[in-house]
Image (tube, rainbow, N blue to C red; front, side):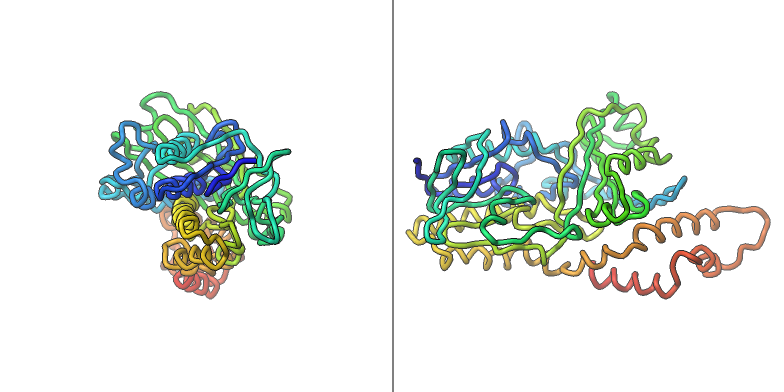
Length: 429
């Protein structure tokens, strides 16, 4: 049996940030990662918003080999019809100024960089180790059990991902409902040298991110595409309950998305080099379990810290932010000699005053808003058919704009529904 002051479970962004913060505070830290190496089993389908890296690691962009692919200067919201696409394209050169607004990342590289920072700060990292359960005594967590081995710790920080079996076994959460989970598939597609910059009108390390509605058809979900240095990250996220109810196969849905005529042009001549899948938290604030107890804390996606407001899919910055706070609180508790829930409860207080819980509370109704099927079926079709008619000229009288809108809404949604949904979006997003 070994003993550490702080033990962190999981080598993702939350775990490495927690290990880094605790080690920087001068306590003895062990980080355990199940994969054969850090970053070997991680998946992301969004961008990393860089404010958290700047706050924790300083001028990360100035390093010789910074942990990102491209800084994003264009954000595109796309609505897909059967053979058409309507895009809202926002380009802003100020997003290309350090420390940047968001960057595209490949998690294998990012996670290794974050773990290296933790190691440089003094944390010990052990990979290829599966944690079976928490080691407890009289309700207090005292470390972990891995196979036949036990490792004791004054504070254990649980960062084992969205499907956290440890928090479930501890009784801090129940089984997730299908409506609160998404299933995501991500592919990395390499393009020939020079094609990516030419096709997406990029120079240097500029990048672009696309978010799409209208595919998949018939279910709650959306798709994304963003640029890396020499590849594209493409993916689809389906609400799990909706996918089951509509008997959808995520792999078939992904191929359908790739076969859309607009998407085909973006990925033409590409070579599939990576395929991965993961669960995504979609329950918002209501999904957050109890976050602390005697001897332990919960951070990252294990705590349900994911937010999607339609414009931003945020998980990694929430992971780093909550991990940092968890590491700092754990170190402080160790130094005071009191690792009870009374002291560790400061974690939730600090989270409430950080962007993590502030933003989750701000957008607490987003899961209910995005359960509206018209967002996925009616409106992408209406937008494309409306614009098709407005741009078509055949010598006939199509009527005024409102008449065209009413005609294209017919059978799909009422004008009242459109106004109501726009109002709900303004209130909730």
